[in-house]
Image (cartoon, rainbow, N blue to C red; front, side, top):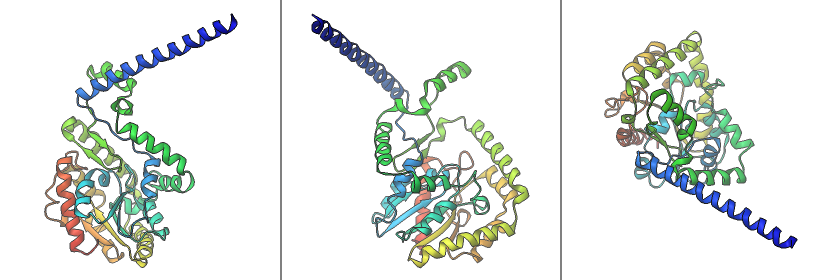
Length: 337
């Protein structure tokens, strides 16, 4: 008698869980279809584990190009175009949004297995202040060397598979954020203008933005940020920091590798603000006399200088193939690849 009751309770428990699973699957499936019908697409969430997966690829190939930099490198460089232009190379993307590449370059210099080409997207700001805690990529480097392992790599690969397969797991569509948008703006959250991929590259579609508002917020932010740095900006600091980076360049070149410092495009108001705080003649051109790395400025490349950044700081997805092609040809012309 007791066994019969126990079996009945177990059966009911499984039925309840199965019913809950079916209902949850139907709800999530309906939400997935709803988001996709309204223009949303799966996107990978970038983090230190994803960066570390890319970092772990360094040194595996005899011919490799490692991309270093900030969100400009992530957004402006078309990985598909670069792979078509350099099919014999392994392309590794170690750029990271909101940060400077100095620490990552230090790390490559210390890695004796790296003998490839490093293309470093950098600005005068990063040349001077790239080791500041708020701008440094050191926490990515530290995570890779101290915390990344087979287990974290496997978990990240599983997460990546889920993220690139399903819209509903995107944090951008967090129900609290969606509900807040409905309450405040009385409209659904519009599809994200940024899309991040498994190789850590991004595309930006600025037609999905209120571009005037976005530009205003960005320009106010950059103006305030440069203002905070202004008392520390000096040619002396620039020369000291570039000499420190030159040690990394020299170490990589000794092993047969190559390094290029590249200033990516900005336009309109952003360029004017840059020139106000970091005039090119004072805080960019002098580095050519200090470093043996290639030094490339977008203003010197026909076909790139004419490209416009919708937010004044990043290229739209429609222009990234042109930019990548022109930059690659310039690097080839200067024998930097």
